[in-house]
Length: 341
Ligand code: BDR
Ligand code: CA
Image (tube, rainbow, N blue to C red; front, side):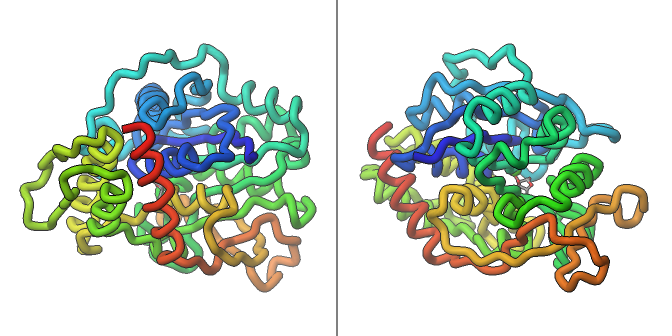
């Protein structure tokens, strides 16, 4: 059993990550917290609750922490993830309520009560995690593993030419998090899934078709580049319908930026790394984040050669296997969709 503390900004690829973890038989969602990023924190929390319910996981505590980045105004991205953050999908109103507890307190309370047991996965800006580390500096020792989706290292950014979205939304938080990991033992260092390898996770319409087939959907799920933008799925399988509507938007967005009719599903990959189900390799690095320069704000820098003379504070993913990842995604989420309908 893997017990997770998740922090998300759901988000199309966050939604896929949640569905994937929900599909695994040995997942315990200890708590899922919302950081503002793709959409504001309230919308993130609503999306997350609704999605978990659709995936047959009602009753998971979903909580909000920070409502804005540590030091700069919040910027959201409706052009990337749609007005509600789930692309063209309109999720049903969740029947559960967003928790009244504070996300940061929840993380600390759970980490203290189950030392060495919990896997942390953050697919959002690092705001809540930075606040948790401020309040409980022993958090790195208390958590079993930490996986972060964020950054890009000598690789084109997706928000500015040198910055990745999660880090760009709250660069000060990211800087604090990496600073907090200085001098920590190697096996406690966060595993960082940056654009360098997450952009290799290209989801195509064919994967959606295969997923619907694995779910036993009656009608083939065809999301095609020549169909009108915003066309909605008519699948008889509710989970397939929502994921298909979400992913269609992501395909359209990537096409708009000349990347093809496909979607980079960053957060799904990070979820698979956290679950230990996806193949990857990683190498140690000392990571820091630029917060001051207007030109480079949000840029992540990795010293792989020890040039700064500072010990590593992260394990940066350097290789992965998209074919293995997508066959795992299709079969796991396809089975889940078959179960929940
Ligand atoms: C990251 O930014 C968000 O838009 C995605 O959900 C992902 O976590 C990729 O840069
Ligand atoms: Ca995300």
